[in-house]
Amino acid sequence: MANPTRYGIERVAYWLQRLTGLGLLAYLIGHIFETSTIVHGKVAWDKMLEFTQTPQGHIILTLVIGMCVFHTANGIRVMLGHGGIGVGKPGQPEYPYKAASLNYKQRLCIWVSIGLAALAMMYGASILFGD
Image 1 (cartoon, rainbow, N blue to C red):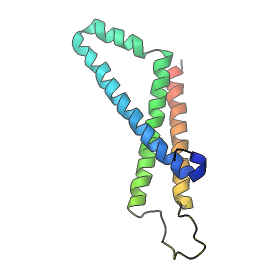
Image 2 (image 1 turned 135 degrees about the vertical axis):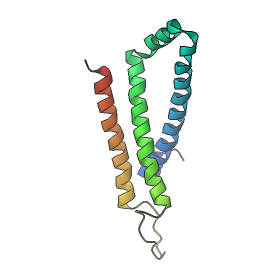
Image 3 (image 1 turned 90 degrees about the vertical axis):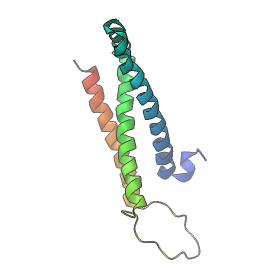
Image 4 (image 1 turned 180 degrees about the vertical axis):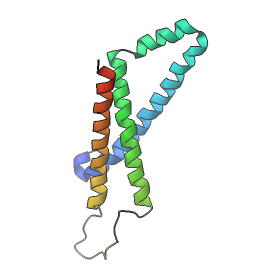
């Protein structure tokens, strides 16, 4: 079931959607914890910022940017597909049956979602790691 080569790009998008959702949930919880340290005073806040303003913290933020962009773009694709936009007309099932798969518009949208996430990650990394 988890083998992406068996089912193609649709299964990859399925797993990435779920993994990015869990990653964004983890980031949200961490962000709330980080932001709540301000109530403990300036010293606690500065200590937390030292922890997050490291190269490892910037890598995590770069990954969060990519997860956010992919999850949003792919979610929009899924919502439009559920609404019938971009899926085409159903065909008459005739023997030999072909496996029902996404059409080229849906596959293109998956690749565009991945590309947008990669571009956003590169831009975010250039801002975070730039001089």
